[in-house]
Image 1 (cartoon, rainbow, N blue to C red):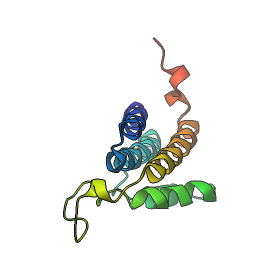
Image 2: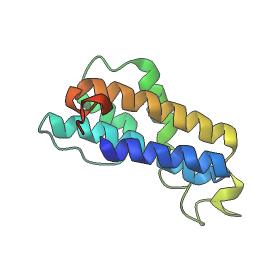
Image 3: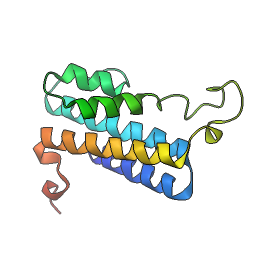
Image 4: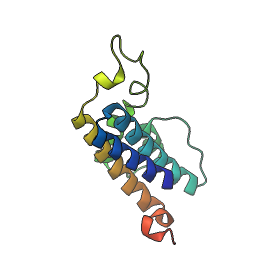
Length: 128
């Protein structure tokens, strides 16, 4: 969970400096790592990188808005990083500040939900 929070910080910093493609990718990574922390806490194995799929496999009761946010983030796993993800141009030409800010917001909500599933992972419970 600690790395998920760190990746979210990276996403926010990328938004600030205008690296929107990296903000989108870091937000996806933050959410993925938070969900995988829940799996780890449950002594279960998590495979894959689809945040929405990972959440669905966790079981019933996942709020619809989190699943929708996860679907939004899933689209940022590959094309944000690879120059051949689009038929022309580079990833930096295809992502906007609005997309990056929305990705960060979705990741934040997913992390908060996951922290609630792993109570010892809350920032105020980490100790010194």
